[in-house]
Amino acid sequence: MQMRRLRQAFIAVIVPAALVGLTVGPADAAAKAPKVPSPAKVAAVYPHLAGVTPTVVSATPQTDDCLPAKVVKGAKSTAALYSASAPAAATPSVTVSAIRFKSATRAKAYLKKAADIMACQFQKMSLTFTSTAFKFKLKGTDQRVGLTTQQGTTGFTVAGQTLLARKGEKVVSVTAISGDATAPSLDPAVKLLKVAVKTAR
Image 1 (cartoon, helix red, strand yellow):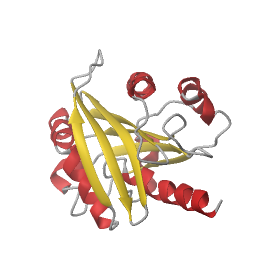
Image 2 (tube, rainbow, N blue to C red):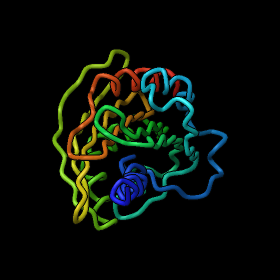
Image 3 (cartoon, rainbow, N blue to C red):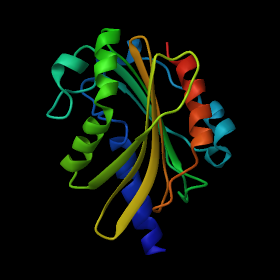
């Protein structure tokens, strides 16, 4: 039981980091931040998350060593974290986020460096991180990046899938994190990403 609680606490920490650098500053951007799918739409894809109240943050990404100002200055973001009661490959914790950049050029630059930004965020938390990039298709988007990840610390290693897609000046992402070293399935993540791309506006 103690090990299970430790894993849940650990995942609660690393899932926000898997937002590819979504550290937030003042919440003055909330009114103009892009939207993310409702809990009902998330549960339609991930039934085990039905009834889970997400942690939602709408704000301005804060620049730091991982997020250069020339890319994220003026961006608006929204993220929703759904923590599974027993995270596993079949029942992962899920985060869906959307960032609106000042231009499509900045969004493209951000997505191009997504893996590096993600690694930087984990390293700042003194966590190990590895990723393997892969391609996937999603109609109606301009650019896509898929990452199968492993992250952890001494005694803990968990796997995840992060899918990112750009449509114009917006970058939308879905991250699914298991409670062990087995990565979650891609299919539901792609399905939710499709919904998220349509929702972000």
